[in-house]
Amino acid sequence: MSESVIAEDLHIKGEVTTNGDVELKGTVEGDIRCRTLLVAEDARIQGTAAAEKVVIRGSVEGTISGNRVTLTSSAKVRGEVLCKALSVDEEAYFDGRSQRVEDPMKDAKKKMEAVQKETETRLPVGSAAAQGKGSGGKEKNGGGSGQPIASGASH
Picture 1 (cartoon, rainbow, N blue to C red):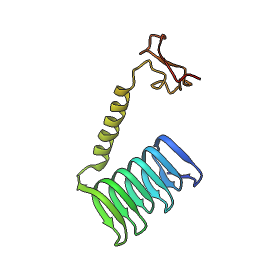
Picture 2: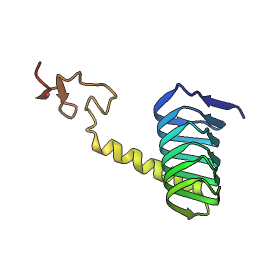
Picture 3: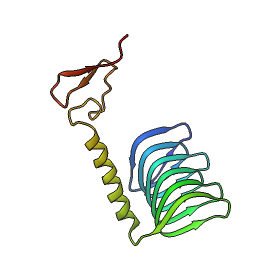
Picture 4: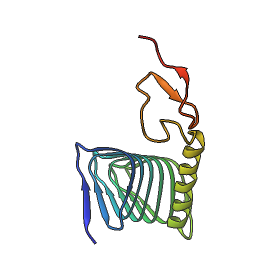
């Protein structure tokens, strides 16, 4: 399997998925799913991280799921850890809860699907936001009708 590196200057909003390994040096706001995840000391995740093996040296705010999860002395984690095995170094910062589960990857997939479904339910299907298009501050699409229903800020 190949290794993907997300560089220090890279900021990703959304979902990162691969069957290979990921070394995160930058920032991910969203979900990351891979085989092995290494979060570098200056890296940050705000969202859900799921991998067979997870090593955290940086910051995570959200849920971590993995068969083996390691929080090193430089780790800063706020949230939930779902795992089979958890190792926490003495100086690591961990504010949240951990739960031992038999299949953390299955639980992670369910959690990611639930978050995605919740996001989709909050956005009307035909809305510009649901289609990934900004409104430019002028019009909001009325649930797929193509008719403006509200004006944005006046200029």
